[in-house]
Amino acid sequence: MHTLRRALRLPSARLSAVVLTVVAVAAVSGHWLAPLDPLAQDPARTLSGPGLHHLLGTDGLGRDVLSRLIAGTSSSIVATMEAVGTALAVGVALGIGSLWLGRGYEWTSLRFVDALQTLPYVVFVVAVVGVLGNGLTQAMLAIGLLYSPIFFRVGRAASLTLLRAQYVEAAELFGAGRLWILRTHLWSKILPTIAVTAAQAGAECLLAVQSLSFLGIGVQPPAPTWGGMLADDLGFLSQQPWAPLIPALTIMITVGALNAIADAIGDSADLPVDASPAESGSPQEVPDAFAVR
Image (cartoon, rainbow, N blue to C red; front, side, top):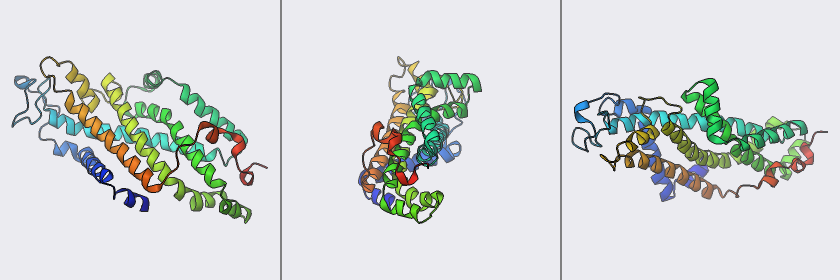
């Protein structure tokens, strides 16, 4: 919390916090804030420009663009949170566990992460959706697994640095349990690093979610999403060349706010740069105090 308070002193962080607050309110209350039914079609008003009745105009089916933009915030943010949550849970658990659960677990987790990094992004998501069904949760599970190596490397590198500290080794020599050491000495210190990584991964996952929505994977029409609106608007460029700018700017502003928050937290916590693969993946780097005997 102290790091977050320091980060919010920066003007860029405050502006980003305002943007993300607006997005969060729209995600939670979008269906009530939308001025019109986002699914209601009005054939008499197709492709109309901005006006008093439709502040951002209508799409090719006569649906209100502003209402669809607000209503689509919920599915976009929920999908991003599901993907980041999956990546964080899998990656951090494997990364920290690789230093604590023995050589065999370490070798297996490293090979698992290496295998995930070789998988082609779109092909893997399409394969998972093809097996489990075309739904939001299935697509986000696939994205989360693909992004889990980021959290694995960060969690492992941050924990590895702290495990070398003398006070951690002293606690272990005095009989402190590993769970107690993790809870007392490690977790609070690696949390800022995890928070920065989560914010950066959130920006990347948001782009990935909208890319899949653009392709029709995940959230199914006619449910509104930012990526789906962008795909629909590209079909009417000759009539409304400005229409794709609305969802595109929404995506860009949200992604920029997440990245700005991540940078502010990193600067406030004075975090070190990410470790190289050699620093985070070599089994020989496990401290002797925690080696399997």
